[in-house]
Length: 107
Image (cartoon, rainbow, N blue to C red; front, top):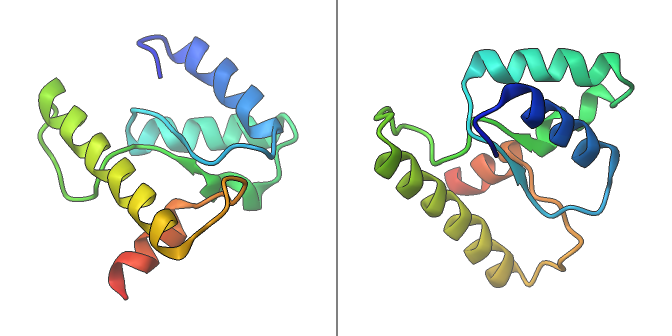
């Protein structure tokens, strides 16, 4: 999303109030995710919806924090999601989640 955590949170809160997004991901850390989850739940987002927020974005296992590496990891994740959607003929309104995506990768 952005370089500003406050702006990221404001955007995350608006996105998570919606139910019409296909994918929502943001650059971050596990710590940022935990903080955002707590704050979103405090503001009325249902806890079970937290798996719809992908943070940190990018294919698992990439530990390099250099911007080009992050960009490649994010592109790889988006390509995987897109490929599964095309293969499964998923409608645009279906919302994949990181948990389901990771399960699909293990199949």
